[in-house]
Amino acid sequence: MNIEEFMHGYKAAWEQRDPAMFAALFTPDGRYHNTPFQVQRGAEQLVEYWKRVQLQEDVRVTFAVLASTATSGIAHWHVTYQVASEELFRIWARSTGTSLVARKPGDPLPRMVLDGILQASFSGKLCAEARIWWHSMPQPA
Image (cartoon, rainbow, N blue to C red):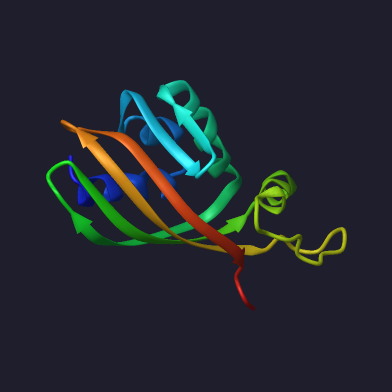
């Protein structure tokens, strides 16, 4: 696997909102750092973490590979999605570095914009470790 192949799989897993597809990108003990201070290890934790994307609708992922070697790579990624539940909105609002959007009960849920960098290392045909650094905000009207 290389960064281009990984990012195509990452894009597909996110747009299809498929936790098993996401976990299948990794080695059995693969690690995914969704923030610098949190890590999911192994298929069970990867699947559990990725279930949150099922609370997103109309997901659109783009990416550009910034650097690639035989065993690692870096990509810039950009995602938009429609928040599909109050639960997901609360997860987002609790995230470090974000603030709660001014909403009244019953107001529509926002469409989110995420922008980030992913660094990955590979072992054979799978990802051994991926780290993301990202930020999000509601999409401007």
